[in-house]
Length: 119
Length: 116
Image 1 (tube, each protein chain N blue to C red):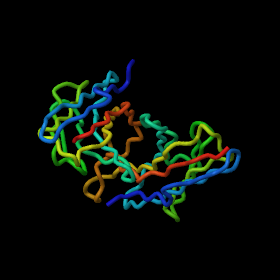
Image 2: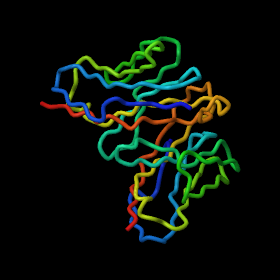
Image 3: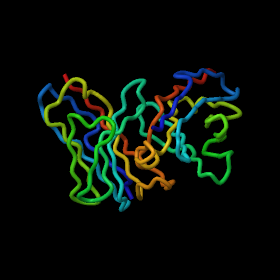
């Protein structure tokens, strides 16, 4: 079965310092991976997606993520945090075929990482 | 183009009451789904649909019913609400549901439901 593990439930950084949000996935099928962001009391917005064309994926607002198959990781980074980055971030894998224990294309969410940014 | 809309935004129910959460999309998407979001749990799939007349269960379907009579609408019904159903509910849609598809799922703004 496929799963996603976000290694930190809460990350706190100072404004202007780098951001690292860690995500590991488990999949017996070639994964499609995503990062979504949810600002307080808002819906979800797609930050970036891994399409297998390149292992380093650039997203909106200066975020990027690197797909590392050998480490089964898809960590999210940003060189310099801004106050407006404070939000909850979700690492997501799209399920593969049920035959391989997948969720037949449905999204599987990690439990989320809350990012706090201190002035 | 309104995207994915959900009504109501907030709802308070008493245990045992029934209600329907509405979801509509105007993008002609085949795939629609319902998730619930609970603190520390991420989003969990309740039910999904790959087209009018076709629905299937997700990870946490108990206590919820769905139907899909049109492409645009995908209502979620709580037949007898329980406090354990207190949550934020999100509806989402995408062009298709395929294992090799990278279609973006668009999410509605959510419905915050409290069951007393």
